Length: 152
Length: 152
DNA sequence: AATTTATGTCAGTGTTGTTGACATTGTTTG
DNA sequence: CAAACAATGTCAACAACACTGACATAAATT
Image 1: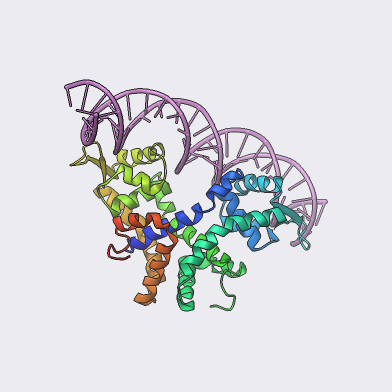
Image 2 (image 1 turned 135 degrees about the vertical axis):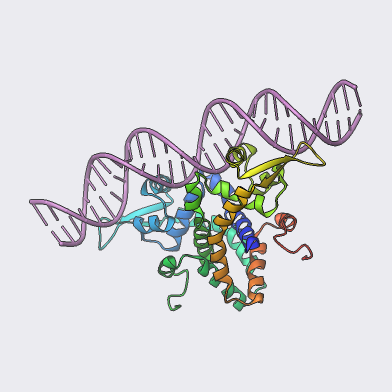
């Protein structure tokens, strides 16, 4: 059993998400807010339903977090052009700035772990992550352009 | 910014920890119980203080989880031989069996992601995880033998 | 016109984390 | 040896973030 990989995964993820905690707490936010900010910044104009699908939480749970982010001016909503029931989510300038701050330490951590690695090794790591994701969700990864759409 | 790696990390970890959720819920346990079971099975005889240090939670938070695990016979305690104030934690046979069940799907996921990879690629992935962990915690990784003690 | 869909909201609940205070037992030290 | 310190346990109150169930509204679909 790959017990070592399980443990390394735990520690690495713990420290990775921990990077942003202090900054989030300073704004009265938590990790839930960070996850929303990440996806809204990654793909602006995402409808609420997609976010629910990605985060795998209930709309009631998302509502609380989203209410705060919108109320404090980090995220804005716009009715969908084709389907006007949809609320498309966009980061505001404030939201983009805050997200960049949140991402800075995480990006540093990733960059320094990648620094001395060959392009091939970097591909290996990305491929490993993809292989760890449920095959059912690979379509989602492509839709978010987290993996190359041309890949199998 | 390596936004793609951030996202892949999120999805991979989400699905990885999700593997055990249904089994845990069936016993009335959650992810907190799983984390304790992991470390107690990985290094039997670990004192409570070490577990607190690893999990980075308060003793009150650990107490609730540990009380259940001990009460339902998954974990046992023994006073330390040299320092009898310490409570050393051991999995019971029931605890070992349950942990093996919990680990089965996670191990499958990891093994199939590793399957077609060269020993070198596997080393790259382990090294990446280590590089993602706070350098301060590298001593802990060695103590847990999650990385080779001879490494720098 | 009736139904379904996307979203929002109210109210109540559970898990897992937090702080603060205090007790017990065992080790260490002056 | 007595005092101080350390490892653990426990009580109580609280917060973040998940859950369920029920209901409302507006827009799309049939």
